Image (cartoon, rainbow, N blue to C red; front, top):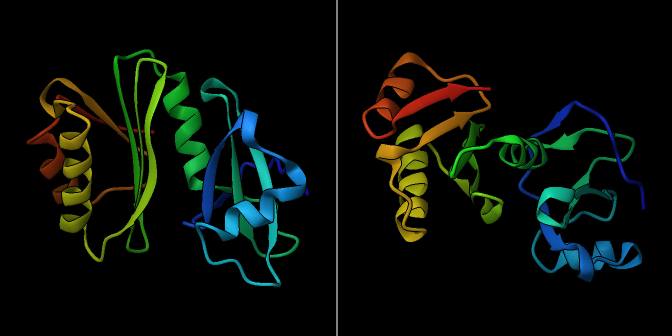
Length: 163
């Protein structure tokens, strides 16, 4: 199974983050099929995420060496030095979200959100569940935001940073 290394972004929810000790390259497709719809024509690849000792397994069209948006968010979260690390992207009706506290990954997921208000709902629901106070946290956003979307986030977060 290929381990890709491209900097191009693949916006897909067909991913699974597997603890490194449980990852077996020969079983990657079987692992992914348990959590995502994978077409027969899709390739399944993996990429390590060393800071959280995990491997991101994902489906992609054959020949495409792009890395999933969640990988880019995971790597950004790993490079931050803040206590609360909230990294998000919203594109194509999907919220991609990674949340960590210090060096502990708390959440890596994507949510179907038909509009930005719904994406905010999922973001705040996740933070509440994880008992993270947005008022003392920065949110890092990887995709462009409209001015109203950015202003909406500023009402809740200490700062909104574009990455």
